[in-house]
Image (cartoon, rainbow, N blue to C red):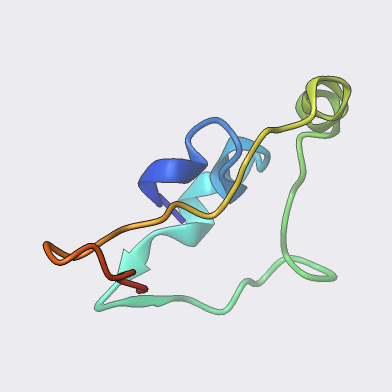
Amino acid sequence: MGIHYNQGFDLLDYVDNKEDFELNDGYIKVLAKPGLGVEINEEKLREAQKIGHDWSNPIWRNEDSSIAEW
């Protein structure tokens, strides 16, 4: 969540209960709502599905041009 290359397609862009995903000491509290505890904004998700995405894994390189993975 909040990864810079997911802007516009991040998990929190499609949920209505964003406050339930606040990090506390590096953790998300157990979601208390029924099912998975996620309230999805289905209208926004349908609109995004029409657009699709052009995402690919970013390639980072070290100074010597070798690939620097996460």
